[in-house]
Amino acid sequence: MELTNDQKKSLLGQGFIPSDDGVHFACRVLIPAGKMNAVEARKITEVCENYGKGVFNLTQRANVEIPWIKHQDLDKVASELKEVGLFIGGTGIRVRPALVCKGSVCKYGFINTEDVAKEIDERFYRGQYKLLLPNKFRIAISGCTNGCTKPQLGCIGLQGRKPNQVAIMIGGMFGKDHTLGRELPGLYSVSQALDIIEKAITYYRENGLQGERFAKTVERIGFETVKSFLVD
Ligand code: SF4
Image (cartoon, rainbow, N blue to C red; front, side, top):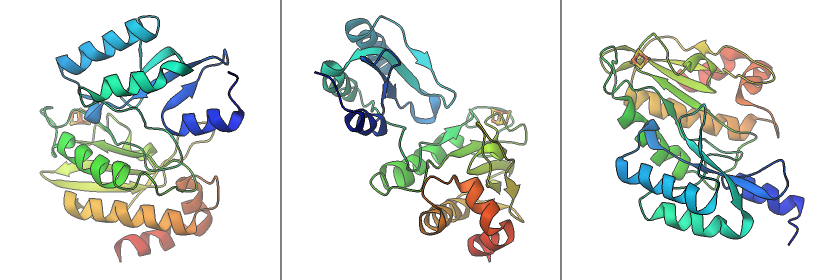
């Protein structure tokens, strides 16, 4: 059965990425905080052997993509992954799962990046999954100023600066066009930072133009105006 473009678009928004051969899909498997256990790793291996061509790719945002999956197998792949607590997703015009460094175990880390990522995913990715935005919204978290996940390039980025204190950057973007995010004044507790992320998402939903990235919204409206909304 030939899929329509609308059907392919809908599948893309759910984490099933159409391949350029027009037949197969790559299933994006979310790996929370970039860490998977042996059971999950075995299941991914099993799925890519049984339904794909025995290979998978690692994405820039520390997830996994299993290519060469046929349309008729998508549901089976999703349900087999779910057996071990893995989910397909991470696409669409919504908040994306957080990109984090290994700051929870790194000697330089000032914050527990794994815990922060889990909270962000729960609160903003899963918690707001059905609330669509003008475009994708990316959050990047680094445990220290080495900035391994490049928080300056996230729509919003957190960077550990002192124990349990982070700097926040807003309005970064990387891709066809790129912009470095600008830092909000001061340092914040993780809990304060999460509240500011929530305000930024709300601001973007209410003020962003259709298709506009958050970086462009900040640029169009002005950093000072957005900053005042977020922290004043
Ligand atoms: S950003 Fe800092 S804490 Fe995170 S992995 Fe890199 S060096 Fe470690």
